[in-house]
Length: 344
Ligand SMILES: [Zn+2]
Ligand SMILES: [Zn+2]
Ligand SMILES: [Zn+2]
Image 1: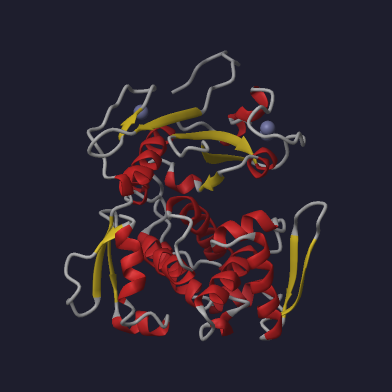
Image 2 (image 1 turned 120 degrees about the horizontal axis):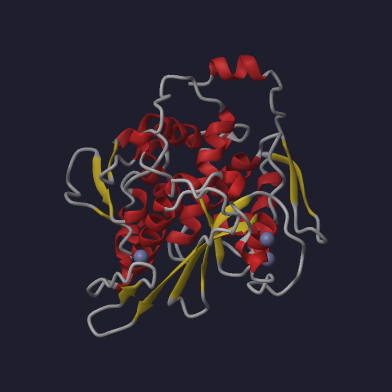
């Protein structure tokens, strides 16, 4: 649709409210006056995300027309004033009580300065995959896997409860990337053994207890699960592309050798690997910590441990910018053409 001649800024802010009531909260949306019946408390968060994503999907806008909605409101969403900078992202913010959720186009600098905020990958809020041109057979690069994993870790950081363990986060990432459009996932016993998560029912219980996934038949040979997170049902990249990213995440270059480490170190190494791209700016400590499900201080300790285990040669935290920089112990091979060809 085209609005000829209009240059008024398009408002790309959506909010929903979860109203507590007997029998579970209900979701209210002022944009479509949707009002859901009582939700289970555990699924309320994902219902809010899914509803907001649905509005964003229905109101897509060419990237060059998207503007920082925070700036248009005088940057009232965050305390410190730093100028707007970076690409315009979809930022998901919850208020302190957890009752109101807001999805809005926000620049990278404002997103970073706003508390209780996570970036929602555009791929979750873009039109249905079937309407995008098919491009599944092209071999994919490590950088594409990195981007996919980065986006999914970012999403999970806001979708999973903050107390979720690193092992459960690693498992959730595999499930989210391998889910078909109905949210069904099948994980083989071999895959779980490779992740050192075979016969670890307590890790699955974390994800079922918070209502993120369901296990219809735990006695099945492999493990068949169903994601209950509505926001993940209609993902834009093809399943085969996501599966390859999931495979990459098991041995993420340049930290492929961390498979035997404890889950907390593996998750930290994976988060770093996802940001180890020449073209991508260094992440800040707050972002890394959120992806790892830890405090910034604990995340620093994890990075120290990666240095002690010779996964990292060194890392540093720049206090003024909050940026984290690191050097892998084994340097990245700089032959992109050859690397792409060997990547599966
Ligand atoms: Zn609505
Ligand atoms: Zn701002
Ligand atoms: Zn801004």
